[in-house]
Image 1 (tube, rainbow, N blue to C red):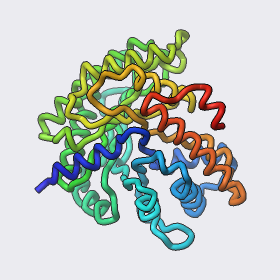
Image 2: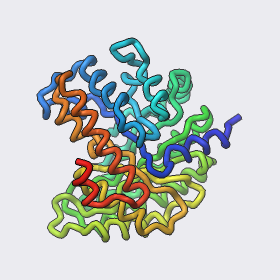
Image 3: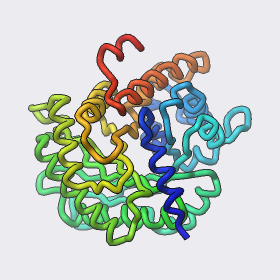
Image 4: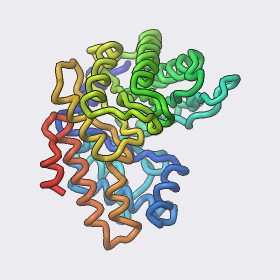
Amino acid sequence: MTDLAELNRVATAMVAPGRGVLAADESAPTILKRFEAIGVENTEDNRRDYRELLFRSKGMANISGVILFDETIRQNAKDGTPLVKIIEAAGSFPGIKVDKGAKPLPFSPGEVVTEGLDGLRERLAEYRSLGAKFCKWRAVIEIGDGIPSYNCIHANAHALARYAALCQDQDLVPIVEPEVLMDGGHSIDRCYEVTEFALKELYRELYYARVKLEGTALKPNMIVPGKKCEEQASVEEVAEKTLRVLKQCVPAAVPGVAFLSGGQSDLDATARLNAMNKIGGVPWKLTFSYSRALQAAPQKAWAGKADNSAAAQAAFAHRAAMNGLASIGKWSPELEKQAA
């Protein structure tokens, strides 16, 4: 029988004040792109060495959970210690990405649906035995001419709900991630409209699937204009509109919201999270579940050289600390400069 008290304990700890989630679950094409940018060969050893230096960093003090890739949850550090054990020793929960990626949605040009439900029950049981405490499944929703369609929104919400129910059946906390992409030229109001649509459909499907919201976490996009939109938004406008859509859509039973960075710059991701927490007045904890916005600086500092490990760890610790402050509304540009 599902242990809801334990699921709630883990979900609540993942969004504890001052802490957030490190998304270190980059797919093979994504990590290849990031390694190419810093001139590093994309080998299994290099991937392991890079992630190990993060997990052994002081920055883990601000990290409540780490989302891993299938390869990483099985890897050992250079000294033979399982990476999962290093994460646990740092006081963080190991987690795992379980979806199989977004594939074209039939008869819906430009739209995708995330796959991976086949065999998921058995994979979850194995990941649990490997030490995972939570999981992640990402849906991808693009804004464009005539899209997203209801078919796309519904198909992805339904898959997220089935995934979440399977996770809880295996006593794993599901992170549900319906990401509205910030690519394109759409306005901030169009992003709001699509995000509201996606979140309302998600929570309807979670209800139908009998998912216990107290044992979940939400990983949404912030409400931002598309990268190509001529009219960009202030930090305050992003914060205000993001909080407004969450209040419209997310039940109070959800312990916390851990935002994705989704292509935002390091400082934008931090400043916008901080602004939301300064406004406050919401029933959930608001924190981060960043990948690029936590890792761009340490990757650049590391550049694949062992001698640079300390500098990379310092860069990661800095970004983790700044986002930890943002998760309690205590970050400022002045603090950013002083700590750099």
